[in-house]
Image 1 (cartoon, helix red, strand yellow):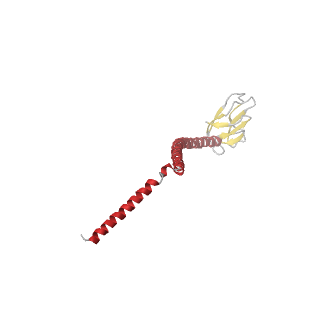
Image 2: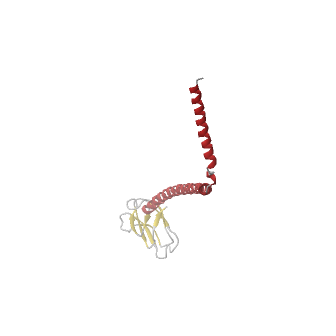
Image 3: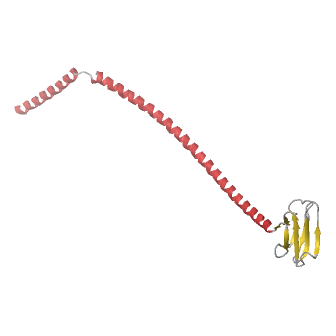
Length: 186
């Protein structure tokens, strides 16, 4: 090896030693940063932050649990409301059917109900059996007459004096009722 080259190697080794030694010496003389007041204060702040984070996480988990319970309760209430609404709709449909049936019966009854007056059977009223709607008083009078005789040809008549009288009417007759109330076709 040449002297020059050897001197270079020795110089490089010495420079490395000086740098390494200087760095080591500098590090040894420098204080431990973890022992400084700033580090200790920051470390305490970090620990409080970690503790707060854990506390907030626990609170968040508790709130999530409550929210899930509330959502379940709301869903159950929604389901109950839906069931009630379905039941109400069904009941409404049944009421409409009953109302339609009752209305039909009422219309038929109204068409087959006669009041006091003189009626032509087969024209004004349908032939059939009729009965008073409620008990009559002593002043009730009814008559079945031959049509077109101006009441001169009495087929049947009565002053029942009470009770629930009934009559059978056929086409070609007149029916006269006074103070008997309503008659309903049976």
